[in-house]
Image (spheres, rainbow, N blue to C red):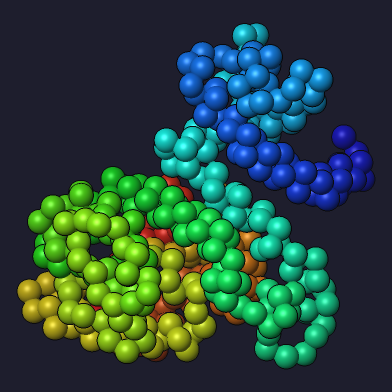
Length: 345
């Protein structure tokens, strides 16, 4: 194919990417993955249409949407009908239920700011893109005002956290060796720490978050909760877990959080303590282009929504040193886009 023609196709494909995302949203809302899974074998179009309440006159239209999703690898198709793929298995509500994350990312209330990005870049002032498009309101204020959107956000974060921690526990169990206590800072309602507590029953686990957050924590005898502010004090523990916390904050705020973490673990006499960080480490040199692109997409989300960022390993190292750590740390890869960082005093 001629380079010029190839470029034209790439341009058109990039311009139409949102159609694929919105078709995925449609499939999630219709419950197509659950229907195929419940059918137990390849599912013909007529059966699929009936199961998701698509009327006969629109059956062929559903088939055209499915044709696109098959081409994109969301579903597979054989002579007998449609089948799940590893991609669409992630959408199953009885499984990882990643579908709620896609619904969150395409929620109309949370996407309108993308249409004024060029104006925001040219405008002076410190407001984020999200704030500019929402009359000065931050993301956190908006989801507080709109309970349905807030609940969707909480559910999406819980689903991602659960899968992420299960992968980490399976791939890097040695991270938790020798620990007697762990505190999950910014741990929300306890979804993350419950996975750890179930995997390591002898580990005393605690969630630290703002009082109004932990008041909604899961009822469990596997972990305790503490209402507090990570910028002020973090209770003593052998290990402090920061999962997708630091990418929400500026470098200055991150240094404060890390200093509080160091104060917490420094009193752990036996092991010397450590901080366990689960976050993206941007690596432009990796041979995984899809992972790089995904990390950069998240970086733009953090920039435009929270005035924050995803960081390279060098930027992480600078934060650690600025917070008073020795610079002794290890980085581990995970099956997801995040990396695991083991940080020592």
